[in-house]
Length: 460
Ligand code: UD1
Image 1 (spheres, helix red, strand yellow):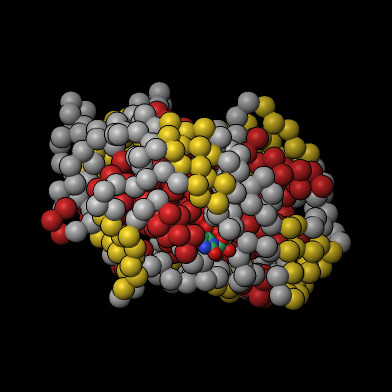
Image 2 (cartoon, protein in one colour):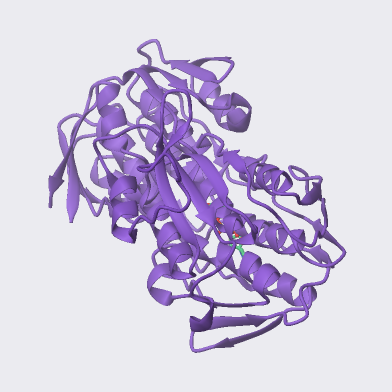
C-alpha cells in the first residue's frame, strides 16, 4: 500500500499536459473486440483501469500490444518491423503501462480478428469486474460479434448501488436472451442482435456506449432515445464510424445506428481527459495559483470553466490550451448541481467541494447522479473544512485555511478532492489508500510537482 505525503500552502504555478481520457479509452478499447482487423488506439493514458481493460481483453483471447508514442505521435513498438505479430507477454504489457519513468502517451493495438480463448467461453470474470465497473463495456461488443458473453455483475461500489439493469433491458429488446445466475450475466444471441427502439429510463453513459457498440453490428436500425451526450460518447462514435459503423446523432439525446455486417480496425486518437483537466484547474483555484493546461479541448469543459469564472478565476482559452489565473485571490463559493452532460459533471463534484472548502462564502452542492458520493466530505472536515451533509445536499462554509491531517481516500474522484484539500492546507497531510487515484489519474504526483506542489509517494 502506498500513501501521499503533501506539504500544502503553495500556489500551483506552471503548465501541464492533459492525458487521454479514462472514460473514452475504456469503451474504445472494448470496441476493439468488434473489429475483424487490429484497432490502434493512441493517446492512451497510463492508468490502472487501462491495465484492467488490457487484462480483460487478453483474457478473452484477443492479442494486445502496447507501444509508446514518439514526439510526432507515431507509435513505437519493441519490434517496429512487425508490431502486430510479435508477442508481448501480459506482464510486459503491464510493465509498459505502469512504468513511472515515462510520460509519453501509450498506443495500444487490439487484434480481435480471432479470439483465441473462445472454447473457454467469453467470460469477464468477477476478479476483474469487481475492480473496474467499466468491464461491463465488453458485454455489448461480445454479444454483437460472437453471439455470447458471460460478464460478472458489477455489484455495488463506494459511490452507490450503480446497477446495470438498463444495459440488460436494452440488449433484451435487441433480441438477446439474458439470464442472471451465480452473480453472472449470461447472454446469448444465437441469431445475432436485431435493431430496436431503445428509450433509456435514465441517462446512462456506459449503458449508451454498450448499446451503441452492440447496435453497430446488429441487423437493421437501432434508435437510442434519452442517450447520454458526454464528449466520450462522441469519441467512441467517431472511432466506431472510422471502423465502418453507421451512426448519426451522437452528442445529442437521439442516436441512430444502422447495423453493418462487419467492422474493421482503424487508428484512433483518444480525446483529452476533461476531468483530469478540471481537477488541475480546481487545484490551482484552491491554492490561489495560476496554471496553463496543454492538449485539452476547452469546449468539453464549458460548464466547469463557467463555474471557475464564478469563483473568481481569470480563464482564457486558445486552441487546445486553457489558462487559469487566480491573481493570488481566494476563490469565491460556487453552488453546484450535478447533471448528465451538458450539465455539471458528477465526476467534478468532489473537486469543487474541496475548492469551496477554502472559498469566501457558503456553497450548496447537490449531487443528483449518485446517492452516496459525499464520502470525501468527512475527510475534508478532518482538514478543518466545514461541510454539512443532508441527503443529497452538502453545505460548504468556506474557511480561511485548512490544516494538514491524516486522511483516507474512498473512491477515485474523492481522492482527487483530498489531494486538492491537502495542497491548499497549511502543514502536512498524509493521504492513505491512494490506489483509488491511480485508477484514473496518470502520474498525478509528477504533474503536481511540475506545478510546484510538494507531494511524495511513500510506502504506507
Ligand atoms: C460513467 C462514468 C463515470 C461517471 C458516470 C456519470 C465511465 C467509465 N464512467 O459511469 O465516471 O461518474 O458515468 O457521469 O464512463 N443507472 C441505473 N441502471 C443502469 C445504469 C445506470 O440505474 O443500468 C444509474 C446509476 O446508478 C446512476 C445513473 O444511472 O445513478 C448514471 O450512471 P451511469 O451514467 O450509467 O454511470 P456509469 O456509466 O457507470
